[in-house]
Image (cartoon, rainbow, N blue to C red; front, top):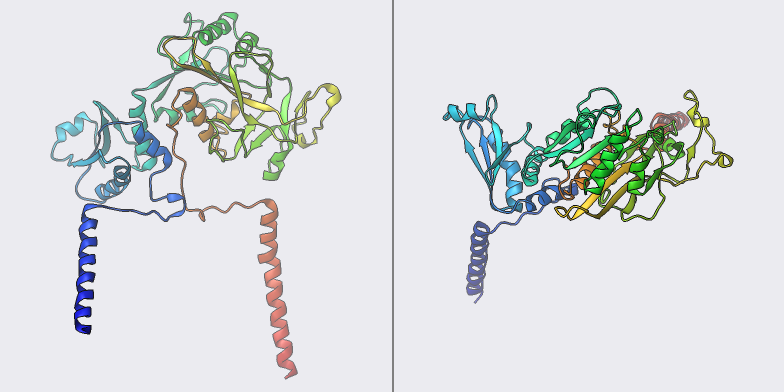
Length: 448
């Protein structure tokens, strides 16, 4: 009887093993146990794939020798799990040199993504960020045209000066957003097929015809990004502010909470928390804003105005000059009309579009343009926030650039107090404890 039981158990075990083997050949199950699911696609990449109904072809013009094909296959496999109709194939560029020359392929080859007759090249190196950016450009259906107002000292979209936006816009260009100049002295209004107009911190007063052209553009349903500055409240832009139902408050916004991050100049506003809006949803990066103008909604309007940038409790609007050598000595003077914070300096506006060709009209007003400049773009989450602003204005709420997802132990974030405690522990407390322990051991041995 025991022998029969043993054979029966062995048969059941073999049947279960064979069944599992058969099922594993038909179905796959993957579990990602890494921190933040770093071995899987980011939610932003999945959102881009959902915006691409139908098959997508990824073609690698790569030599069969070397590790590139294997590396590309490992990356694309993540996308195939989320979108089964995304197919990967390889072509040896040495076997078809004419096609390679026509595609401009040389050196280590290239990776192309094809969708509904359109094609995008994946930037090097091939990783999730660059592949998702190529897919995003395909999802957009073509380049988005962003017109930058020029002629009155505005920040240049292709400029390399410290105050210009060249670095930021070159990165947006990889995602299918193309910047073009717009000079109202050379054109009667905003050209057709313009997806967004940007007025970026003019230095001189705008001519009346330029302001009127912007107001007319808003009345026709166009989307607008206005980056203003503390000194921009007297540049003839009052009609534009009235059309938006907002006002640029006088003075420079100062905030003392930056001192907790070793930012000694209170004119540099540091944010780590944001009011809820589609632009800031899930956004937790620290951003830095030099020389900020506070904003206010001053009249009832058909715009829905939502603040998404707000200073801290220790902020106020400072009037008059601030000593550049000792900016931290600035004080709050309510008797002079200075306003106590928290104060808003970023507004997102939307309304039913006056244009029958569009369903919604959007605008963003921010009381600082330096945070996207070549000088300050690399600080914290400045670039990521700027990309979110452009994506929202262009109506691509789900098409956002991918955040870097590294291991959590690669970067240690310590406050100044924590760093002081760590220094005192390892440089003073532990050596002193070891010295006392050694002295105690030596004393006990001498007594013996």
